[in-house]
Amino acid sequence: MASSPLRGDKRGAYMNYNSIIDKYYPEDNELKHILVVHSRMVADKALAIVDKHPELNADRAFVEEAAMLHDIGIFRCNADGIQCFGTEPYICHGTIGAEILREEGFPQHARVCERHTGAGLTKQQIESQSLPLVPRDLLPETVEEQIICYADKFFSKTNLTKEKSLERAIRSLEKFGAEGVERFMAWSERFE
Image (tube, rainbow, N blue to C red; front, side, top):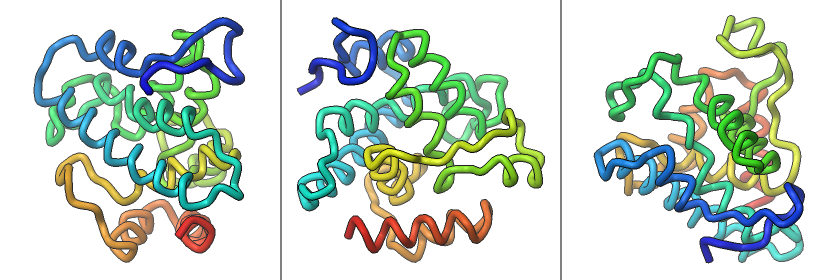
């Protein structure tokens, strides 16, 4: 389950998300607990969507792996409410995670990291909101990226085991603009 042949990345490489988590979160502390529990909740919801919709032909193993690693970059961010004591703004955790996974040899998994913030971010949103990100489109494109991004919106890192209602998930996206809410609603119609 945690190890499967990698599709779309380095030939001969295998993904073991637990070993990657352990490498970057070596201490058994509250931050690692938050990361693992949140990621498992997201992965379980994403896998339920995959199982409910075989017509989507989503790669189930990839969905689990990428969902478990989508927030791998949070430790470098400053978000003390979730035990993150790094120096980077929290909005950068996706691009930080993408850098980590590219260095590990997993560029497809890295794409999930950098494209899961909000319901994805456009270059225009990044520029107009003066977000500390390189201005470029960071939108989920593959069905796997969309499923994980969608599932992530139902779980926070401050209330780990309680799934948000659809309405609360929508409210959490409003700060990013109407475009993201519309994208999320389209996913809701497709995945639920």
